[in-house]
Structure formats: structure tokens, C-alpha cells
Length: 82
Image (cartoon, rainbow, N blue to C red):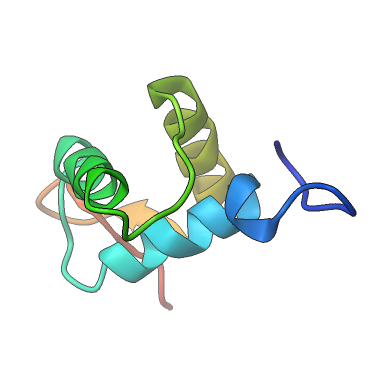
């Protein structure tokens, strides 16, 4: 679930899911809006793997830890570009 390996596709890992979430953050949005973007993508077959909300939070934690995302001045998620 966390790392892709021989029998686990990149889309099924938090690396792949994190990349998908980063693509959605072209425009800053709230945590709830980002979750709804993912749910919409999954239900409309634009993302092939179903993740739980817990896995979503773990993925956001990972993205924060590696400084890929941050909360901006308005308190919404955004790229953490220096």
C-alpha cells in the first residue's frame, strides 16, 4: 500500500496517490475539496484505485513531510514551492 513493488502498481501506493493529489492542486483548495476531487475522479473512472479517507490522510501527511504541499495564507492546501 505504501510503496510500489512487484505485485503492487504505482497507482495503488501512496506515491502514486500523492502524485494524483498534487496534480489536483494546480489551484489551492481545502482538504475537503481535494477529497471530493479524488472521489469524483474515482467514481468517474479517472483514477483506478479506491482509497479510504484514512489512506488519504496518510498520503497528505507524506506530502507534508516531504515538503510537497503546505497550507497557504488562506489556510488551504497548495504546492510548497520555495
